[in-house]
Image 1 (cartoon, rainbow, N blue to C red):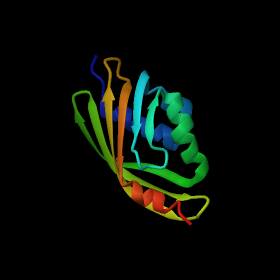
Image 2: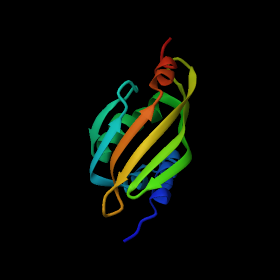
Image 3: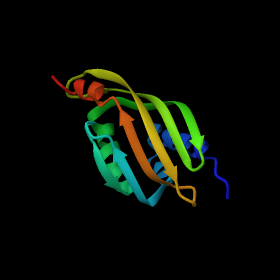
Image 4: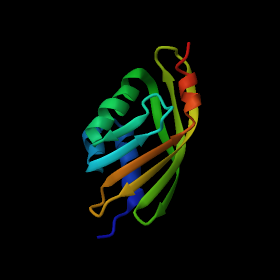
Length: 132
């Protein structure tokens, strides 16, 4: 079966942006490996979408105001999608806001589910907004 990987990734961003967490989770395989950039506030390697929600997305939703990942460009090659975009938001504790470039690398399995994610980001801009 042929999948529209760009559309699937785009829909996952939209689901997260709209707070549809259960829908967001459906785009990911059970054996997901998520590489959040080391140096990013929630950096690390997470296994499974529930670990990603708990350790990354729920924290972004509670510790930040208007945190957003805004995709600007998609590149598709086989089962891989690279997304370039901008993060933005304000850290609640400091009130400081930021904007930073990101690149997200997605790999899809044969069932059309994302089973590997890698984040590349200018984490210094994010962490600077967290400092008093």
